[in-house]
Length: 408
Image (cartoon, rainbow, N blue to C red; front, top):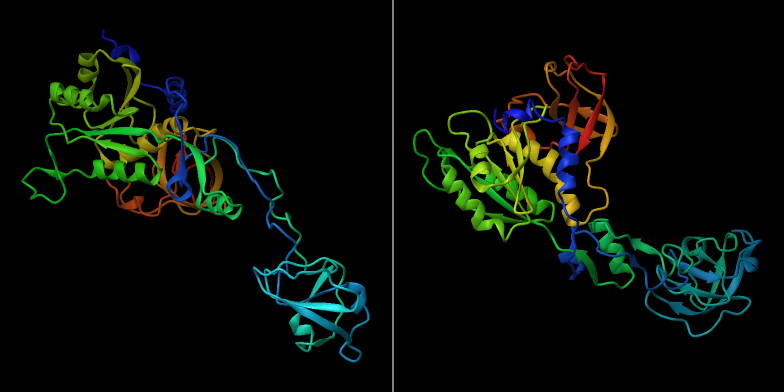
């Protein structure tokens, strides 16, 4: 009995992820990038606001800055009349404090001077220039934005291990930060294997298929802010596959292959692992799709071998690789987010093994798309943002069932 036979029927999904994370190092290299270049990357240090935001008391609307007590009895019948001391637009500074009985014409975003404690909207006035009639009272500090009310000085805006999103990038820019310290993006080697593969854009010979896996996985890596190291497709030849792995091993932080992981006559990946002298971690998982996934450790780096069927490759990429890539990229929480949802339609399959099914999650509800759910079919991935986790032994799903989903 060889080492592969001793691995039995494979691991549960959670055990497989835990094993991979044991062999996944945390990033060490930090670089400082402009915010737009840092988008999607993981903060390598806490980022703290160097100023308060807004940096001064300001008006939230067009109107007049004044003292509330001066207009507390104002009405359309008996308006309060105030002297207009001047005007301040956004970006302008009125040079002195307001006096009793004065108002300052202000536009949205204008800095409020000392001596005022509220802003009356211009619709409640006669729009006066030298003097203004005010037709309604306001309370002290009504329509008044305090300096620092959004972000006080010294606020931790992003913690080390958190991802820089479009929102956080905007927040950082709003307090004057133009660059961010981020962990270096992981470099992932991609090798697709199979005699049947042809490159898109070339004529398709009989019996051949276009290689969608390389583009699929490389595109997903770019979406996630990672860098791919793509190798030309390898034929079903273990020595050629070994050579391809060695060619990109030094450049990549880990290597992902597709194809050759099952038990057919040309499923060579177990032989490849043996030829490389790599340390097998596991072969096969107790789930569908992608059950024959194989993982090994080669010269200190993970070698993760996925099914050649496109959806099976994508599913196991998401299930296995995403936690690994999160750890490699410096993210604090590597495991995928799990939520509970109410199933909105029937799904006929279930039963003998755990199954992960494409779904669309929104507002605690999940819809399982109708169509071809086979491991070779990709069309239903459009719009998919989660996997519905159907446990072993659970029968077909019915609309109204409560299910667990893994968010993508």
